[in-house]
Image 1 (cartoon, rainbow, N blue to C red):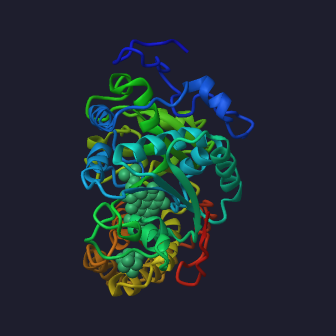
Image 2: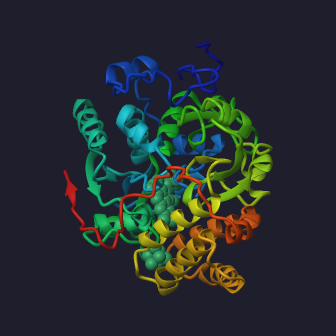
Length: 436
Ligand SMILES: Cc1cc2nc3c(=O)[nH]c(=O)nc-3n(C[C@H](O)[C@H](O)[C@H](O)COP(=O)(O)O)c2cc1C
Ligand code: SF4
């Protein structure tokens, strides 16, 4: 690994090229110890709050939990409130096709903890809560042991494990759960930065965002921008799955072509018919079009996509896009928190109609209904759950349009592509709180 010139005197030189976040990751799956972490990245630097926020702002870092919000703006909005602020690390990772946060928290916890300590001090917080899913036991163990070996850093770190339904990772759901309620989204305002955990100004941040802060603080914003493009600086963790030879989490520079993304995952196992970009709130793109895209906001938005929390699923020609979409939407309908009518009833009706289309038993009137319903449910929930599902359905109807007719005439024998749609319904699950 070659060293590069840095932005500030006394600052460590950073890794050149990739990997950055994943530097030193043990391929055996073991968690990186604190000693090894410090060998790779050096000790945690202490930056005055203002300097840290300005460095993050110059880096152009944006949140990696799905909303793509500028991180410095969030830090500043909480820091300015100056009263008993708190940081919540949103390690819920409720997107079934994403594995990056589990990898960071379970195998590189010190990088996330460094970022959490830095962000906490930037907003004047003495407490951090790391909220994770309750079944990720290995990750919880790794976090517990990582927290226990760190010296006193002036910040108390708590762990909270909670239910794992899709919407329980939405930030107001996380706060509601930590405040003793059900893990379901609440209406905004107030937003967490205004009144969050126990009424305090709360910064909610994704683990990858914090890990990136840990690197930006060490190596500087100019180093951060050495990778990527001017409007899309740095690197990102992308979970690549589906019809690829080596599914997994990969760190890639922004600007990387989707062809190279798939090549990083070993290439496809069969000719592809489509890509699902951005996870289950994402967008299907026909494969020849998708392979022309790159990991860049403008490029993706030109075809109605966003990277979401960094998920790319390749759909092979042997699979059925209609059936896969019906399964995903049925899962999303099950995941509705049941608080908003259009989400609760609309998503189930859409999922059923989509299944009927996939089974070849729906008439044109049902297709028209699905189109109308996806328009009607948009913006009608307390959270973006209906909007995300509607985006997926609209893209499925466009990309798999020819399939709809074919399914009426022929029997579909495509095997399931194995996309994860487990975990059951949030409404049917109990809520267990485990804060330490
Ligand atoms: C339905 C839904 C589920 C979400 N699940 C997660 C999640 O599991 N993890 C996460 O970090 N963000 C999730 N988010 C986004 C969070 O609300 C929030 O934007 C994010 O945690 C902020 O962190 P960031 O600024 O570092 O991205 C979800 C959003 C929605 C609408
Ligand atoms: S939109 Fe759906 S998931 Fe979101 S709060 Fe309302 S019912 Fe719950």
